[in-house]
Image (cartoon, rainbow over all chains, first blue to last red; front, top):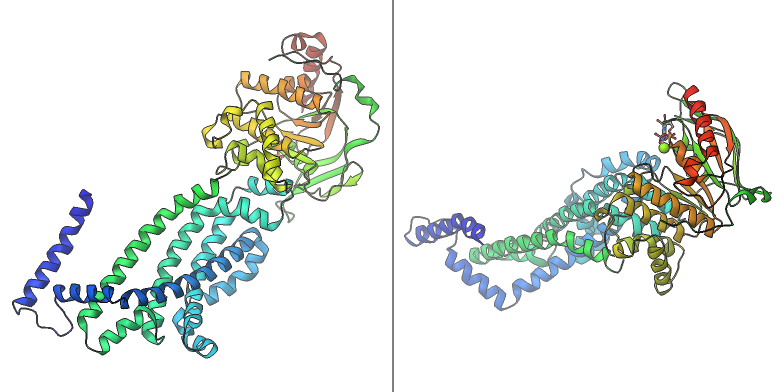
Length: 250
Length: 272
Ligand SMILES: Nc1ncnc2c1ncn2[C@@H]1O[C@H](COP(=O)(O)OP(=O)(O)OP(=O)(O)O)[C@@H](O)[C@H]1O
Ligand SMILES: [Mg+2]
């Protein structure tokens, strides 16, 4: 609590001086709005539901893309982490594909899917799959070999092995990859919306800018900031929570 | 700890004619290419009789663990063949449980003791309701009932090893392969577990291959003791332990025959 108070001193000072200087005419830039106006616009946006609808659309896409990336990345990562030979075969391809910026695929995805959720989610999945894949490979490689031998002597099949040994053993590290990917998912989704997809928070931001509603634009930026913060806080707690889950009933 | 009478383990072993397991002219080298390639085990021919308690001793680094891993199927011999009940061993099997030397690494740290034991039953596809009584029975057999809901990291070494043994028993193996299972434990715990494993193997007519570097432990437990020489290891001696069962930590170890075996093994290993 004390830390939160101390931490909010700087932003509070900043906002206060911003408000004062724009009211006293010290700041007259068109690209700036007053904090009080921004707050009003934010409340209005929340009240009429427009921000929430846009948030819902962005999240829907980001999570869809993330889920696809997570399933693909974790399964492929587990297979590659278990098979050094396969990893050596696939690694150059991974390293070639990984540096391509996901947004560079926007034209291609647009041709394939048109506007809408599929196109955007594909881009998100592409961006997210790499950190998940790479973290999973290294996490699986780091699993205590004894545990895999236990699975061998119990003649577990691949699915059982994945569910009962590999995923729990690699969970903590895979979770880090998922956290990183979740941040990326949000960034990429908003970017695709700003660039061309007519839905979600990115698109609302563009609309506000184009209709010169600087207050709304700032309100939405602030909202993105809040979402990012909450999301990160949630993800931090998912780690221990899922360990508890995976232990439950054992 | 009281050792109950057991008729099943003892001199009557010779009656079993088909060997439980065998190694025929097995050699093993580690390392793929010639410069770093090292011959570890050379020309090992060995029979493990059904129901027998076979101990293997040898100098540190001689390849005891490697030999046991070949019996389990985790490691394939470079030449020669390993057979289990007549069939060539091509990989690990539920029928051959292996108790790893490093018990702390062989347990699932995210599962409770009961959960670790249940793993063997889950792998078999058993319904949870059917698992419960079996897990409970094993917990009490191994004396770890009170630890059922603890995690391995919270237990002492002796307790962890009991959990590993319980998990291996849960897989209802035909043969138990144990790699210096009590090596890292204190003397009291070690003796208690020695007697428990004797009771277990006697009750269930379990075939046991037991690796140790402790000569007295080998004589105390075994029907036979196989001695491995230095690298590349070969079998340099096989001793029949003619001590009566049930064995007793005090009287057995004071038996003149025990001492004679000890003398002999000690001499053999010193020479190598
Ligand atoms: N996977 C491996 N790759 C290469 N060399 C190995 C491997 N495993 C074991 N070795 C080597 O083989 C030899 C025998 O090892 P092993 O673990 O079987 O001996 P051990 O008799 O069990 O030793 P200890 O008494 O210390 O347990 C050692 O020199 C070891 O370094
Ligand atoms: Mg060893």
